[in-house]
Image (cartoon, rainbow, N blue to C red):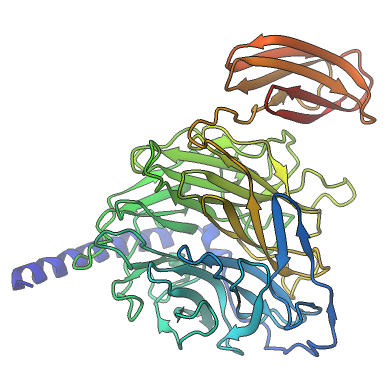
Length: 566
């Protein structure tokens, strides 16, 4: 490389880092920010499990035509281990051999200690059975696992450790489908890191990118690094413009790098088009501020010691009209009066501008919490979303949650009818001496299915599960049968309910009201309703106080809302 080019690059890097240092120091001098309130630290000593062979039970498993769910952290006999805990799972699967899937998580060998390790398991039969050998670096405090795979089939496991407030990450590699791992490579890092690998065919192919919360950094104010040599080494830290945290990363089809996370005024997206260039220091093109009508939060009642969820970002690689679209989804505490909704926004110009947010969850209650919102995009452009939802919980146990799923086949403009895909469970059960069920889930999609790594307490303790969601969605580019986007205001209602719904085709519509016993109280049918958004006022004044169900049916789908009559 010519000396003048080397010098120019060095000056550019120094100038960039110096400016970033000033910016980050200014941020840190402000009043206490929420990013400072949540971090990993060693509090308890390591406690081994008393007897993994004796304290066991049957592992939870569920299967129907759409959903397959099975426990991952099982013993050699496929049984649940009583007395341990597992959460914060991350998943990676080999696209060239989908039978190979690896999941990593925070492993607590004994729920009487919050000392955690880098747990992992692998499957070679498409998730039917799992092998849980134990932890990478057993006996070493590790947390915040993030997994990915490169184009050659090597799995990578990014893991945080903390020692007396000093943070660092190691990235471990496996070339045999997760069966064994190398000794790991120091990768700078800090608390709540994320990692992504460039799998495009451009100049950044194989690059490994990572970012984390700048406040809890091994190299403050730095919060970003990359590897350009397959993970053999990682560059010195630099600063991400916008200072995002509690988020994720994605690589676009042109090799551009995107980071989404919480910023100082809501959710932000930072973009770099030159991060892929191995001979240039990473510079950030811009940072966009998103209007998600809420922000990421910490300490919700459902997860008092953890996050409501992370910001999830993904880019469309479909080669269709949506190619290159950038999507962000997150469970946010609404600026209005809702404790948690799953909100979505998209950009069709590479992250410069963003659409108005769309609420993915279709319940209208202001008291339900939708948390741990997680998104992935299939190669064909389908967008998958999952989250935990308290809408089905009783008033006696309002924190009980179930897993819900929805998808979009029109670039996130509309979403399918929310589908509940798990039983209710109590997220406060089985806490490993800390008041949370982790901070995130992780999902990967292929053209046929969504593959989710998540945690629940369906066994009576905190465990990690693999769920495969397979829907028969045909004609994905021609599908004009979106969700009806049914809404009613106000709810509770005393006199008139204002109904809003939207249909994608001109078709027959039926609107009905039933009581809690299913008795039909009112019905209206229209033989031909034009495509688009429609409004209707419905009289509730003559109904007695109580709960009612309003259902709207089209030729292709139906949706029901619970309405409280005052």
